[in-house]
Length: 113
Image 1 (cartoon, rainbow, N blue to C red):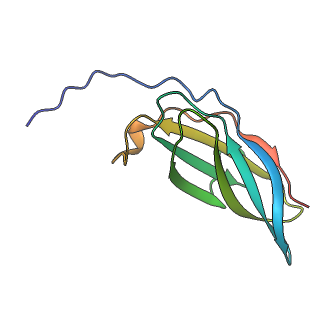
Image 2 (cartoon, one colour):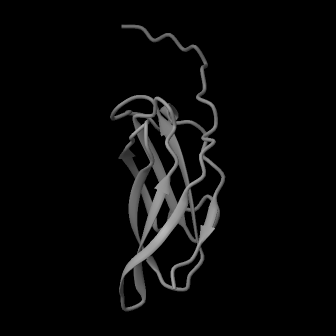
């Protein structure tokens, strides 16, 4: 076996994640429904949600991508607390390495009340 490294890096994720709505309010938490703009040829998205830009202390998961329409992710968050979401994509299914993912999109802030 041998590996050929072409040093190819996927272009930065240009889509913008959007918190569409907050639902299922219970106590001091709600479920944020986050829409990820479709990235052509994407097979997976890596989604981060945290209390700071680039943070992942609330949500850090890889999810299957629909590369022809937007993908929605449900994330449980604290009400009234600023959160930030960003995502990345990979063109391989079940990628084994984080290096298979493109650089992350810009972080977008949101709050559920």
